[in-house]
Length: 84
Image (cartoon, rainbow, N blue to C red; front, side):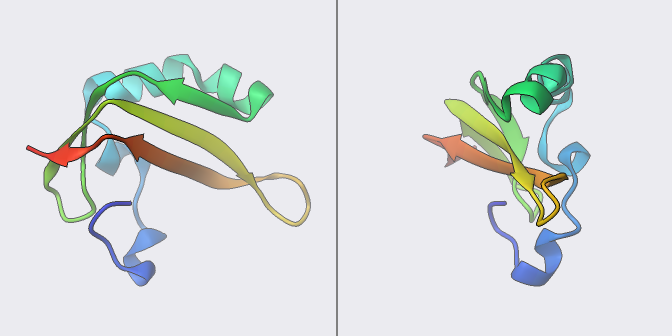
């Protein structure tokens, strides 16, 4: 995630990244994510790893699979982001 270290990356949770509307959007689309493997989120705001507010035009979320083909974690890409 934005503004973090490799060590701190594993401790970042979705609750720390997305604001309430972003979490609601992600949770409402979670079944699609698990079935399809990815999803697009509309424009919104989130927090960087250091707690700074960020706006973005779109976010892409995808399922990262482990060696056993089970979901390991989620990958996120924020498109056209900027600090507020």
